[in-house]
Length: 629
Image (cartoon, rainbow, N blue to C red; front, top):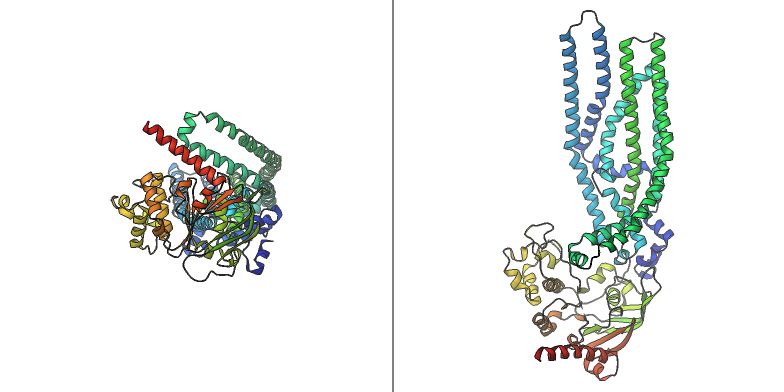
């Protein structure tokens, strides 16, 4: 079990531990949720709010008494009409009193419901925030585990709208109070005529509830397959609608390709829902038979009483109205109970996700001191979870404190994977990574992350202000340091020219006047963010100049030493000419270190580095000669 991985003071390795389906199920869903326990947990924040409790009780009383009021009004009006000296004025006054009472009761119940609707939505949003925090903090490797995403990814279903899942249950339980009061009042009235009517109503609810509960459990057991199709469909739909790819889709006529990709997903949807519909169709016969039985017993009793002369015509009309409303109320009550049962199954999944430890917790070692660190890869090998193909094999590598290193190689050589291991996103499948002599797997995850600053090639700023993007927070931002980092990254002139300066919002997803930076400017922003972290001791620059123009790139190289500010550094690039300023160059090829040394030493060797360098040089030289000719 994953919990055992902390022996010896090492962190858990959830990316691999949760690959096994049985272990994953036991870890993510350690116990079966019971409805009373779920409702008790759901309603803790509600019971802490006296106003919500009072509103629920008030709604139950006002809404629940409206049907029985209708029944007695029917009796009174029927009796009034039969009276020998009744006048039209008396009938109209009686009808008016009833209409006014019904209107007042309806207004009060509707106001109680609508005025507190947003309170339940607020509770849901608090749970959404907690789940998003969990999702953003969980191990990076979990994002690349499709089986985990299909299982744990189901957490969002119960939080996806106002009328489903958590909030939908709140609203339904709120209305359930009125339905229960109506059912009790109508049932007790009819039980005085014959208890069989009330007993039949209770039997109908039991049959309907368990029938729907069976369907709900049946669907819930297959939620992983449905989530898998949902996840793939949502991703494909997002790509198809992404404006960034609009030119490619149109220019290369890729519409048919997207349609072809959707086809098997739609077929999978069809297959799943055919199974669900077939089961619902089978159970619907039982539900319909129970409802027919309720109506048959009720009307048989009333007709028998009327024929036997046990009740008068006004009482018969009153009871006939009561029976009709009773049948509708019992159906509504059964549907509400079934809805609560169905939706709380997915609320249970949400609670499981909130409660699960999805970070590779553990580790007791700390990295002492301050300043640059040295890192040693000792016979490290790695393959990704769920795959047996080795991405890195027997890597032995040393990063000495305070020195700069360049990591080069063709696409697919394993450069990105090495960075993931270096920063602790993954743990090696074999071998050891030591930081200042300490096993990295024995260092707590948060402490490990604090050691590194990074500038990645694919930069995506958040819809926050520029200052918040750089500081990584909205609290206690050192504005002078933000400006200093922007100057070092070469972005200050741009930021200073903006009306709101570093307080300018980025992107247009929240603020209409949000700032959209170019690809090169986004990379400079990312560099400034990496520089802002004073406590980082190792800098990683992954193609940091890929989107920069030649002048900006040259400035970065010229000020490289100042940018590092005493950190150990790893520079990743495809352009070998840009790596010569580093103390040492490491060439990865096929997951192994093919060559390592200074630029001058590697050029003198007849190896892959020299071949790649000369090949790239010929390209630039040929381009220059063609431009001059």
